[in-house]
Image (cartoon, rainbow, N blue to C red; front, side, top):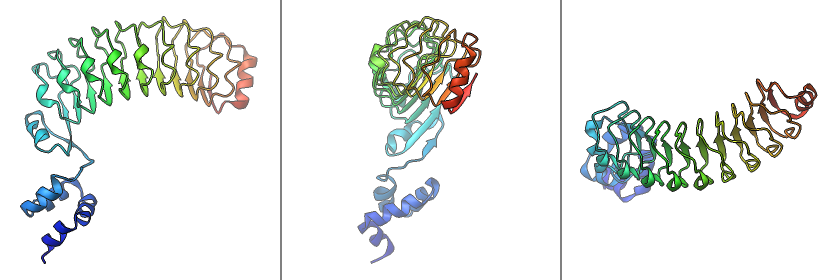
Length: 273
């Protein structure tokens, strides 16, 4: 029995050998014979993110067990992206010619920031990491409740985020929201410069909460269990209930009494003021 036969009859050994090799080494090793390539490289789950050029996009359909990454940012010629539906990580930021992204539902990490002509993102609910910041015409994000990491920064026409309560990391910077009460289960929530928000009483379970420049917020008494809390550049004047916060940013909060700051120094691990 030769080496190839031993390897092919013991798939665990084959996969162990492959796993120990770098991607290029793995590829050339399996090219040794057709059988090794069929049973090894083509069936083995590769964990590296492989960067390819746009013109090689057909490789994505050839080897679906490989995670491909394509960067097409600032490409204003491309309009049809349907052929890229199996890419793992796809950067289409600043691609103004794109209007239809319905074919991209299988993408893991998708960047559509500054794609100003996109209006409908209802097909992207299964994307893991989605950036649609500065897409000014998007109004409906109700289908994105299962996205893990979602960037909606400066999507100024979005007013309803009630469906996003289970998103893990959510960036709503510069959005003109008034109601964030449904975001109770979000782990990391960025509300930087959300000037219309006044009530954050339901956000006490958020782990990381950025409320910097939220000038309309007055009462933060319910945020005592937040781990990382940024209240810089706000008009708050009472932080007496925040002694359990681990990291607290109060820079340029000019209305807070000195005695409250002195009390916070005793318990807050990282305090900026």
